[in-house]
Image 1: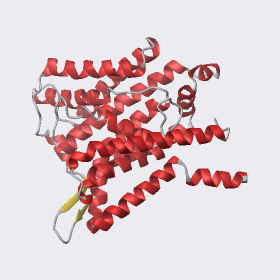
Image 2 (image 1 turned 180 degrees about the horizontal axis):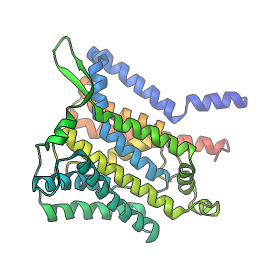
Image 3 (image 1 turned 135 degrees about the vertical axis):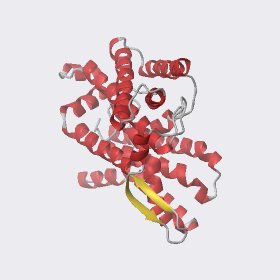
Image 4 (image 1 turned 30 degrees about the horizontal axis):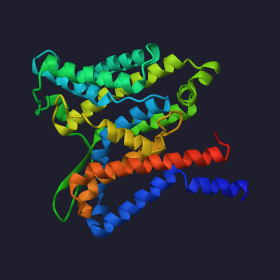
Length: 337
C-alpha cells in the first residue's frame, strides 16, 4: 500500500471520523423512528443541553492533554454558583452580572491554584489531589453556608437569561424554542482553545509535558508553570460555567453539578484524549460532547427509558476507550509515536 493510500485510510478510520459515522447513524435511526427529530427545535435543544458539557469538557481536555486529570470541577462549580447567590441574598454582593461572574471565576481561580500547588509542587497524583479538593470544596460549602436552594434569580441574571440569539416557533404545536445568547460562550471557548493548542508555544508545551514531562523540561518548557496554567484555567472556566448553569436552570444548590465528572471525562476520552496525556484536540472533544449529548437527550425518541441513560453513556465511554486504544496501536505500528 502506498504512503498516500495509508494516509487516506488512517484519515477515514481516525477517531473523529468514526465518531462522525456513529453520530450520523444515530441521527438516521432516531429520525426514522421520530421524524420530528429533524426539526430545528431538536438542534436548539441539543445546543442548550450541550452548553455546560462543552465548557466543562474543554476545561478537562486541557488538563488531560497536560498529563493530569481534574475531578474537582463539579464541586468547585457548586461553590462558584452558590456563594455569589448566597451573598447577594444576604445583601453582601450587588446585583450585577459582572459581580456574579467575577466572583464565580475568582473562586475557581483559588481552587485552581490549590490544585496546581498539590500537583506541581507537592507532586501528588492528580486524581488524589483533585479528589481531595473536591471533598474540601463540597464539604466546606455545606458546613459554612448550609444547604438552602436558590430557585429565584436576581434581576440582572434574569435579564441575561431572557436574551436569546434566535427563537424558533413550531407551527404544529405552537411551542417556542429559544437559543440563549450564552450559547456563544462555548463557541468562543472552543475557537480560542483550538487556536491556543495548535498555534502557540503554550499549546505545544501542554502537549509536550503530557507526552513526557522530563523530555519537555529538557526541551526548555517550564513544566510546573504549564501544570499551573492547566489547573487554573480549568478552575476559572468551571466557575464561569457554573454561573451559566445557574442562569439557565434558575437553580443553585450545593450539589447541583456533583457526579458530572465522569460524563465530562467520557466526552474527552471518546473525542480522542488519552488519559496518559499528550493527545487530544478541540475538534474531537466537540464530537465527543455532541455524541454524549445526543444519547442523553434523545433516548426517549427511540423508546428507551431515561433510566438507561447512565448505561448508555457507559457504553459510549467504553467505545471511546476502545477506539483510542486501537488508534494508539495503529500509530505505534506505523512508527508515528
